Length: 112
Length: 115
View 1: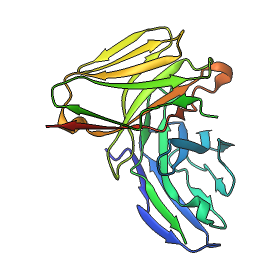
View 2: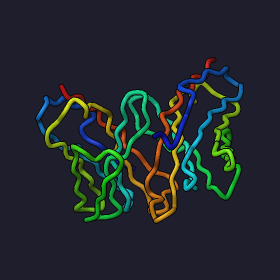
View 3: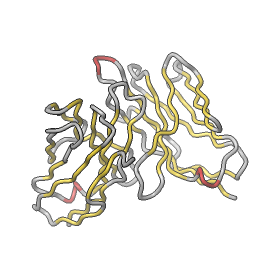
View 4: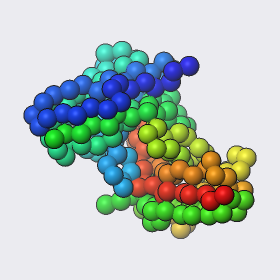
């Protein structure tokens, strides 16, 4: 009963480096999301997907890319890390009715 | 431009008393509202929700009230317990145009329940 699993839990990147945040869910949810949470702020939607092969931009997509080749996986790619991307990243999934979204434990990313 | 506002960054209550967390929204298209609870170093977990066709939804110690005319909702926790100490996020979505899967979150309110 894993739910939504994110890896890694913590990461420190240097400016200009790239990395992929992994997210997988075992609930067969069609919808998946990436949010970021900055200190003292709410969660902001980066990208979302309504099914395999379909992705779309959220509120703050700049500097990120996503792919959705399977129902289970929704990785988030940072190509050229910048200090402004220092944040806690949460992946989530839900059913089409979105009566509730299930969140992973988060990835704390620091760009120095 | 915050569409979902939680104007109280923090709230402190005594164990056994009522906790009332408030949330205001500006987008009249929002028609579904949720409360999430978040402990440190964990992801948010769903607590309770309410559709705009209702004005109240209750689940055990948790009750959410919706006042559509005032664009205001509140979460009541009675009685409050120390384990309720967490950050509470209000979130909203709109079914308009098929975008009901996108949640807009408030900044959160840190609730501390003192023994």
